[in-house]
Length: 90
Image 1 (spheres, rainbow, N blue to C red):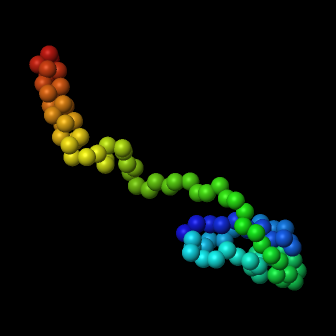
Image 2 (image 1 turned 180 degrees about the vertical axis):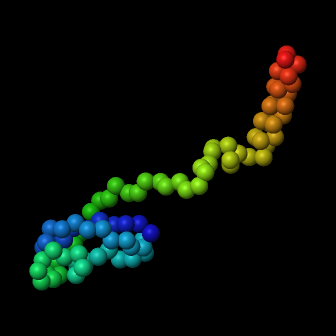
């Protein structure tokens, strides 16, 4: 679920809300985010966000992790034929 950034037109505060993509955009400044002494129910507008960066968890992945079986077989046959002459030279 993405984080959306909004700005209140009454209190001029920007705040972020964690919402589902299916949820309707907010129309009124939430009471807990309002800077005014009394909640003004100001209209809000959604701001353009920069988006989120990718977060890779675990040990990582490589482009070769998802190769086709034909490519893997050809690479294996190339590596076995290429390593034999190198072993003979030693």
